[in-house]
Length: 149
Image 1 (tube, rainbow, N blue to C red):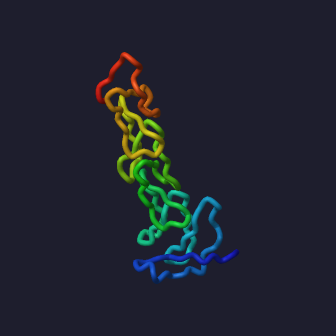
Image 2 (tube, one colour):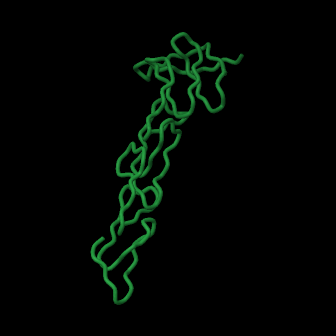
């Protein structure tokens, strides 16, 4: 059995403790960590290793974790995720994500639009309109008018 050098951080990340008894028993879609006894703990993507609990913990909806990260990180505004995500997803056109850490995107209302990854919707100005929240506003036809929104 091969030995894998896995770092376990306790409190001060500048002083890692190296585990020497962790085997390469984890699947390619898992990350290997050592518990306090030097045994291998395999965390799935979308989970982080909790040193205090010596176990894998799911990332919450609205966050993500990659193989190189030690903790979950909130999705940026304009993005969302479900629980145990390894990436965040850009909000679709016609939708928006105003805040970091969103688990869903909001929907643009009538008379407004947004592009993928938007943090807000753009409202149509007087004399313009849109019937599709994924398309920008266009000028009204000759002889027609529209109010704001």
